[in-house]
Amino acid sequence: MANFVVSENVAAMHGSSTMIAAQMASEMRAKGIDVIDLSVGEPDFDTPEFIKNLAIEGLRSGLTKYTPAAGLAKFRQSIVDFYAKEFGAQLTPNEIAASCGGKQALFNAACSLLDPGDEVLIPKPYWVTFPEIVHFCRATPKYIETEANDFVLTAEMVKAAIGANTKLLIVNSPNNPTGRVIPKDELIRIIELCASRGVYVITDECYLFFAYPPAEPFSSAVLPKDVREVVCVAGSFSKTFAMTGWRIGYTIANPEWTKAMVKLQSHSATHPTSFVQYACAQALDSFDQTKAAVAAMTVEYERRRDWLIPELNNVNGFKCGMPEGAFYAFVDVRGLLGEKFPTSAAVAESLLKEAHIVVTDGEGFGADGFLRISYATSMENLKNAVKQMRELFAKG
Image 1 (tube, rainbow, N blue to C red):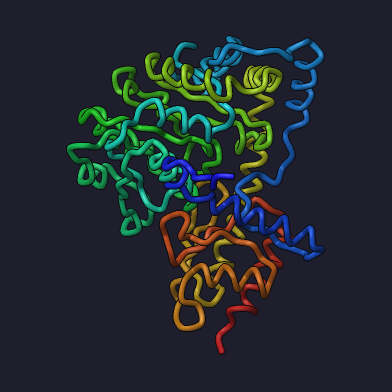
Image 2: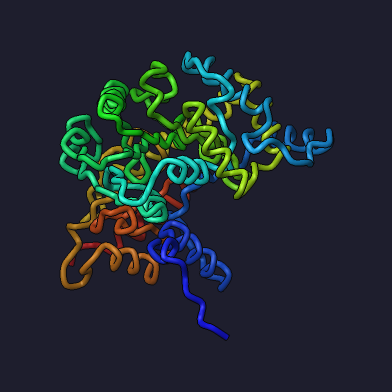
């Protein structure tokens, strides 16, 4: 039998470090080890009960067949109506396409736009999948360092990075892994700059509604139509609606870009699950009930954040800024690095082996020397984890 040779497109990719960490936690649990998993990038809340009931309603009404590749007309209209109510955006259904989660939305957007040799600007630190999508498209990632501005991207940074071959900028706010939020006015300046230079922008708005006061949710879908010509919003129900396993997302882009993404999806996933689309459409139409469910989760994440960040800063060798959104703490552990811990991966390994705490090493996010800690878990777990971290890394 001939040896299997992986395609160049896939060989250029790395496995997802966040998924690898989650797998380690699962394997340890299977061995009966009591694990505190601070790696997981998903809400610890269950999907709101009324959304589950809507999915059942869709099933019972016979929504078990194919839908158009772009998604149900009702689903696309519900996105239009929701963004109008929430943000005052003026969208049309031919700008909307359903996708199997935010990750496929990003793949569809990038693969329908990029050619080999195109340059893609990616601010660091980045979500682990961004560079892998670019490599898959045989485009070239160009990274923008943001640490000097506490991990917040600015228009000046983007302006300095744009080159002759720059085709695309990928922006993620609220950010994974840092939890930082780009101020509304700055994000508008960034997108307007890109529009003036003919550079497309994908805005990953997966954590859109997890912004803590005084930060506010802001979507680039509200920008004037001439500016939005270069923008694709990648949206998702996974995080803010606690629906990670449902695999449902969407894109908002100009009609031609949308048409190209639908064409691509028609030959891959075809469309997201029919009755899931129905449930999401109905949930968005139930505006007040849905907003209340999301707000309740946001308040709890903010409570955890407010407790956790000061506590992490009291762990020897740890330093962590205050995130304005999402549910991650991005911890600088360079104060621990040396002979015992040559890299942040060694710090993560020590936490895993000695304290049975699973975190994600920053190297996968383009930031060796950092750890991503998710607080999408119980306060009990967070308190136990911090206690063990203090003991593990105590001076002396």
